[in-house]
Structures are given as C-alpha cells and as structure tokens.
Image 1 (spheres, rainbow, N blue to C red):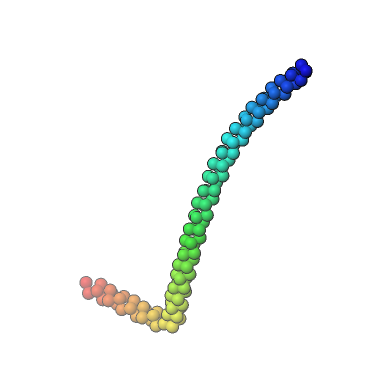
Image 2 (cartoon, rainbow, N blue to C red; image 1 turned 30 degrees about the vertical axis):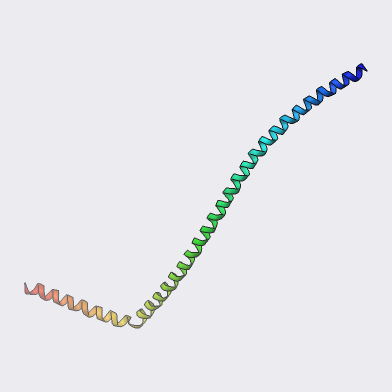
Length: 115
C-alpha cells in the first residue's frame, strides 16, 4: 500500500508539473496568437488602403487617357488643316513674301540714298 501512496504522490507531482508546463505553453500561445492577430489586422488594413489607392490611380489613368485621346484628335485635325493650307497656297505665299522683301529692300535703299 505504501507503493500506491508513492505512486500517487509521484503521479500527482508530475501531473502538477505537466499542468504548469501546459499553462506556460498556453500563455505563450495566447501571446503569440494575439501578436499574429495584430499583424494580420495591420496587413489587412494596409492591403485595403493599397486597393483603394490602385482604384484611384486607375481612375486617374482612365481620365488622362480620355484627355490624351481628345487632344490627339484635336492635333490631328489641326495638322490636317495645316497640310491643306501648305499644299494649296505655298507658291502664292512665297510670291507675296518675295514682293514684300523687294519692296522693303527698295524702301531702305531709297532712304539711304536720300541722306
């Protein structure tokens, strides 16, 4: 019977040690779980902010694309008009510029000659 008493005491002692060991592990687990929960929450909020920023950037890029398209159309129309203008009246314009240059030259020559 004495043996049973020793066995019970040893079992109770090891059982108490085991419970306290589990308690330490449970506390550490709880602490690590809370730390992990905090980190996951931070990552979640960061990913939500990144998603919002991406949506805003995509909206801005879409608006810029529309602006560039309309500007490209306007520039294309202007270039077409300039081509039409340069093809049709290039010789007339050159003649007018030459006549104007000759007129200015003669006026300057006449002013210098008169002094």
